[in-house]
Length: 102
Image (cartoon, rainbow, N blue to C red; front, top):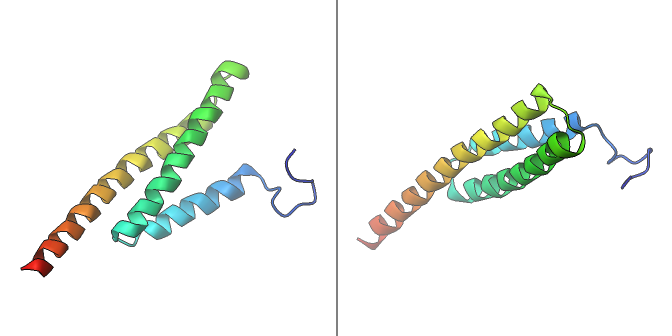
């Protein structure tokens, strides 16, 4: 155990999940490329965590959890959408910088 039972950081996974998805939803409201980069970094980390937890679920515990797999799928789909947002935001930044030069 990393934290003691009385630590404020010792929370159920749902608390961390709700905080993460709320954070991502809040950033999704901002179309800037800097928020897209932050979202991408957090989404990549979440997907690495999903792969790790999926490995534990399938190969260590040898079980299947539809809620867990659904969460992994949501994380992966979010990564795809965020990468599209990042591409669009970067192209908008390039268009703006080209306009400034003219």
